[in-house]
Image (cartoon, rainbow, N blue to C red; front, side, top):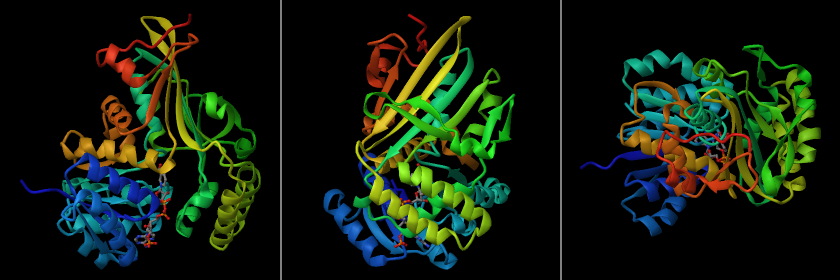
Length: 401
Ligand SMILES: NC(=O)c1ccc[n+]([C@@H]2O[C@H](COP(=O)([O-])OP(=O)(O)OC[C@H]3O[C@@H](n4cnc5c(N)ncnc54)[C@H](OP(=O)(O)O)[C@@H]3O)[C@@H](O)[C@H]2O)c1
């Protein structure tokens, strides 16, 4: 049987290399690492080949800004994982995938990217291609958690997800464009679900954070609303929802209270000229002020009704390494894509194309710590224990003590 070939654009970047390692471990695919620097791609391919065999991994030069290099790199591939910090070129990367009959999955955080892909949606469907966007941790997982909770309640009334990302940035070799993407978030519109509809948040939302309890390691942290496309359709899926949203925790005090407000202002006044200096300041602030404990965590707090009784569910996912927690959901989704269960022609969000329970089980197997915390003190279980005791689709969210 022919082995599937998957290309990773940005294959030797932080996200790309984590995805490559996991794909080699979890599948029998051939993995091609791509980027603008062929020597770096080859070095990474050699390192991975020493563990997985040289027939499993190779390298190619490709530049997202150069459509012909993209077409050459994608030729013969089943799917391209776009793990490069190149949302500005999303349209032409997607077009190259269409031209070469390649499916697509990206992990980028960008509304411009979503616009470029939406413009191609009809072409994608007509070509019978499967394009998955907003892959990774966030975007990528918050709506998976809500859909998981949704299958456990008859009537879901509240589903709020918060995240903590604490990274030792000074130890990372991260490209300037990836930091620029982070700065770009300061200029993106925040929508909040209020009175039954998504409305633009007041400009003060950034300076009036709410708090969420992230457990024993991180404690109670402030977080601000961040709109993710995957949350938009949840009130339609669960019409009882009154409170739904995603809230992102702080990176460190300097970046939260100095860099982001300054970037927000600068990006409004000089949207183009401010990007680079703000990205340099952001990178310096991330490296200089980030402190342990390090780790990444995503937590869902959900309320609803089961047989007419109010119930509460908390689901927490964590991993010591933020890039692993980005790569694991991508590979968990790709496992469903590769066996055909999540492969459908069209443009999909990772958080909606994947089946939530299988995704959570696969993620736990790949190293994500998952716990279901119930409101009765001392009744914490890993998801594995929980699932072992409960047949699929019959979990009852816990009630008050
Ligand atoms: N969804 C999530 O949860 C999540 C989490 C983390 C990161 N991300 C996203 O993942 C992406 C990568 O982030 P990262 O932190 O891994 O960045 P990184 O470590 O700097 O890696 C970026 C990679 O992109 C490549 N690249 C940059 N420009 C390129 C171009 N024009 N053509 C081809 N390749 C190019 C780089 O190689 P060369 O510069 O040598 O070409 C490098 O391999 C970003 O878009 C980021 O927003 C998403």
